[in-house]
Length: 113
Image (cartoon, rainbow, N blue to C red; front, top):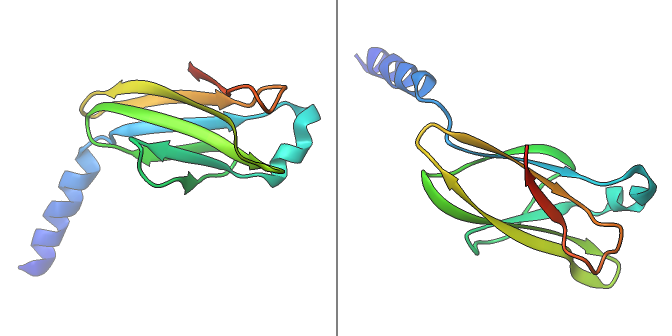
C-alpha cells in the first residue's frame, strides 16, 4: 500500500508544472574576470544564494516577487546590484536575464527573455 501511495504522489508531482523563474546571468567576454566572481541572487529580501553564470531555476510560489542580483567584485561587496519585480502565475515559469554592466558601479540590467 505504501508503494502505491508513493507512485500516486510521484504522478501528481510529475503532472504539476513547475512554478518559478529561470534566471540567466551573463557578462561580456572582455569582462572575463567576472568569471571568478559568482553572482548572488536574493528573492524577496531573503538570504543571498550563490548561483553560477548561466541559467539557474528558482522554484517560487505563485505571486509577486522581488528578485535582486549582484556580484562581489574586488572591494565592492555588492557590485552592479539591481532588482526587478515579477508576477509568477500558477504553473508559470518566468524567463529573466541579468547582464553585468561595463562599469561595476552601475546596476546590472534586467530583462525578460
